[in-house]
Length: 190
Image (cartoon, rainbow, N blue to C red):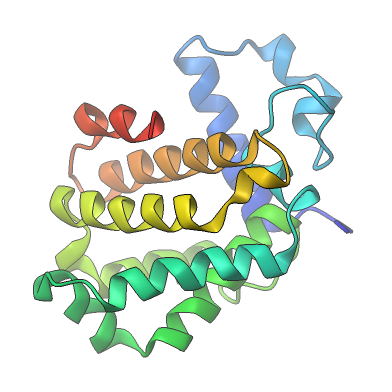
């Protein structure tokens, strides 16, 4: 299923591992383990977000993203929903998020513009790149995860995905100067 590792996969994986070393959750010796760096997970071991694509199908990922944007476009909080509406229709957002996650989880380099494109889109949505926006985004994503039954393929998937989301949200919190640390760990246990 996975042919090579995409640029965003490598960058996010390396940033994640460096963060885990900084926090003392992993050591340099542990991250030299071929299993941790591999896109192919071992059965009954920790699943890392860059290994998700080895287990779930692209169709299931697309379904998750569709559920998420269904939530966003039906949000009753106009300040949040309108930012997405102004930037494109629901299908546009689904396709962009899908290509972004295809790069990260499946090792494809399909997301045009890579990291620069991600930052560009987030700057366009700066009104929601706040603590309140992050909380709203995570609420919709957590609802979509629950509805998508990802763990029926492997009971480790939802935790790996939430760990990825928490890590990226912490990163965005630093980039856009909003603190998510005080509430993000509550989301990890949902």
